[in-house]
Length: 595
Ligand code: NOJ
Image (cartoon, rainbow, N blue to C red; front, side, top):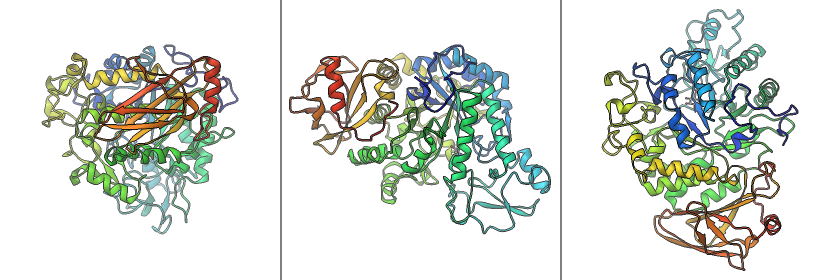
C-alpha cells in the first residue's frame, strides 16, 4: 500500500537491517518511554547510560516492546530533565558518546525494536551558545535567534504553563538589557521561529539525528513555536506551516521516519497536528484528552467520560495514529479536563499537596491507583484496547512507586528497580552518589518491587503485562481497527468494538473484537446492544474459551466481576457473512483509520 502522506515510494529506515519492512509500524507498535539516566548505570557513576540501556535491551524485547522513546539525552545543564538543551548535537558525557548512542540504535534494531528520540525545538537552555551570542551581540548573526523586547507588553494573552515556578513568560536579561520570551522555565528562552536562520538550524538538528539512524522523534512543545500578539500564542498557522515544511523535508530525505506531536490541546486542536493528506504534518499525536478521563472514569465508576471523549475525538487522516498513555515523565496533566473534574481528580488522586505539580499530579501509576492490582490491570487493558499506539512508562510494568519528597517531576524519575541488591541493581556506585535515590518506601521498596522478583513468579504484574502485550500484538484490530462505541444498559460498563474490516491493506485476517470493561468496584451485569452482530458467536482472546453468543435480537448480557474486563473476538460464520455484517455496523467516528 502506498504510504498515504507522501508521493515518494515508501521506504523503511535503511540504517536498520534488523527491522521488518513495515511502513505502518507506528500504527501497531507498543512504545516504551525510557529515561537513559534512570534505567541502568554501566559505568558506575551513579547515573544511567547508553551502555546500561543496551545491556537491558533483551529485557525490553522479552516484554514485547516495539519502539523505545528516549527523552532528551543531549548536553544540558539538566535544569529541566534535559529539555534545556545546551548543545543539540552532543550527548551528555555521563550517558556515553554518540558512538554509544549509535550502537544502541543498531542493537535495538537487531532485536526488532525501533528508537525514537525527543527534540525540544521550541527553546534552548540559556547556556546554549546561540543564546550566549544572542544576548552578548544583538547585532551579530545570532542576535535575532530569540524573541527579545524592551517591554513585557507583547503576547499578554499567552498563559503561563509552569505556574508553580514562573510568574511571567518574559524574563529580563541583564546582559542584553532586554526581556526574552519563554513558555517554560526562565532559563529556557524560546527560539525565534520567525527567523528563517532558526528554522534552517532546526532542520539541520533533525537531519543530524536522522543520520544517526533514529526511526523518528517526538516534537516537544510543538504548539508554541510562533507567537502573535492578540492571540494565545498556541497552534498558530505559521506553526502548522513550519510542521508541513519539516514533514516534507523528512519525507524527502528520510522517508519512513515518523514525527510525533506533543501538543497538550483540546481534541479539535490536536487533530490539526496531523495535517491533511495533501499537507501532512505529524504521523502521530499524543491523545491528551483521553488520558485524564480514564482516571476520572475509574473513580467516578462511570463509562460516560470515556464515551464522550471518544465521541468528541475527530477522525484522523489515513496513515495517522494517536499516541496514548497513562503516565510519562511529566506530571499527570489535568489541563484537558473541566475545573470541576480537576477538583475531583485532585481530591481522589492527590490528597497531599506534595503530590501536585503545576496543573497536575506528580505520581506514578501504581501509587495513583493505591497499588490496586485489579485497577492497574483494568486501566492498562483500556489503554491497550482503545484506538492509538500505547506509550508505556518505564517501571510501570512492575508497578514501581514514586518519591514525592523529591523535587518537581523527579518524583517519578527514580532509578529502575531490577533486583533486591545494592541500588536495586541499577548501579554499583556508592548509594550516596546516585543521581536520585531508589524508592525505599514501605509498599514500593525495591526489595520486593523489582524485575527479578516479578520474573520469578508467573502471576506477577510483569508477567501479566507481557501476556497482554502479546495478545494485543496477535490482534491487528487493536492497532489498525475502527472504534465503534457499543450501547450498554449499565452506567459503569463501557463497551466498544475494534473493527478491522475485510480487505485491509496488509492482508491480515478480518477481525472484530468486542471490548467490555466494568469500571465499578462491585460486580455488574449489563446488556449490550449489538444490532449489526445478531447471532454471532464470541471467543475470549486470552484463554480461547467460547462464550455465549449474541442473541438473534442483537443483545448480549454479560456479568463482570469488580474491575473486570473481557476482550472477545466476534466469530465469523463465513467471510462473506462477516463482510456483509461488518458493513452493517454503525460507524461512530466516521474515520477510516487507515482504510
Ligand atoms: C515538555 C516536556 O515533556 C517537559 O518535561 C518539559 O519540561 C517541557 N516540555 C519544557 O521543555
